[in-house]
Amino acid sequence: MEKQGCFKTWWNESVGTRSRQDGAEHLGLTVNILWQVWKSRNELEFNNKQRHAMTTILKAQEEWIEFCEAYKDNEQMITEETAANQTQRIEVENAKVIKVKIATLRRSNSKEIGIGVTAMTEGDVVVAAWAIHERSYNCPQLDEAEAIKIAMSKLAINGWRKIIIQSCNKQLLQQIHSGSASNIKLHTLVEDILSLKTLFHMCSFCLISKSVNHVSIRVSDYALDILHDEEWINPLCC
Image 1: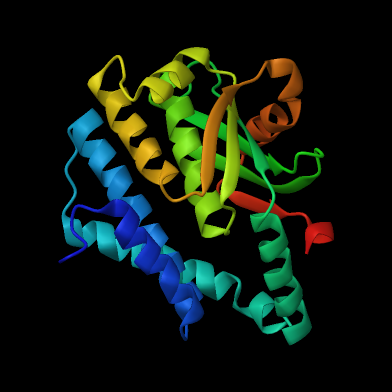
Image 2: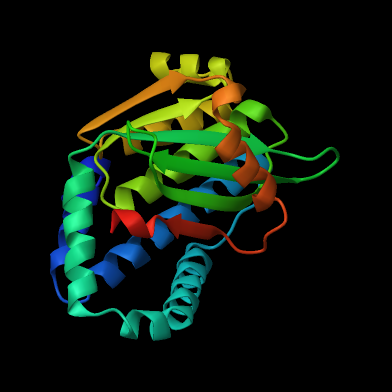
C-alpha cells in the first residue's frame, strides 16, 4: 500500500524481484497484468466497455501460463553458459544508447494495425525487433502513441536503460515533449508514456523521416498478418 500512487517506486521494486527465485517469471507476469490493466482502462475510457477487475487478472495469468508452457521446452535447453552470456549481453547493452524506431501501419477499412519496432545500437546494429498486432484507434496519433508505449514496456523488461525513441509522427512527439495532448484519449496515452519514461536512466524522443525507417515499416506490414506478437533478439549480441 505504501507504493500506491508512485509508479516508479512500484516498478523498481518489481524489477528487483528478477534476482530472486523465480523472479523472472514474477516480473513477466507483473508486466502482463499491468498491460492487461492498461488495455482494460483504455477500453473503458475510449469505448465505454467495462471489464471486471478479476477477469482482467485471470486473463493476464492465463496468457502468461500459455506463454510459459509454449517456451518450456526451449528454456530447458538453455545451458549455464548461455545464461552467463545473456547476462553479459544485457550488462554491455545497458551501457549503450539504443535507438528505437517505431512504425505503425493500417490497411484501408481495417480495425487492426501492425506495429513494427526495431532496436539498434548507435552503430546501426539491430539488437532486437518486435512485430505486434493490435486494434486500431482509427487515429494515427493514438495508434503511434500506443506503439511507443508498447515498445517502451518491452525495452524496460529486457533491461535496456538508455534509449532514444524515434518516430515519424511530428505532432505526437510535440505533445509528448509538452506533456499535454489535444484530446482526452491521447492525453491518457501520453501520461502512460511519461510514466514509463521514468524507468530509464536516459530516454528521449526524436523525429525521423520514413526514408530511414524502412525496416520498422516492413516489420509493421508483416505484423498485420500475424495472430501472435513476435520477438526477435539478435543472437550475435548474446
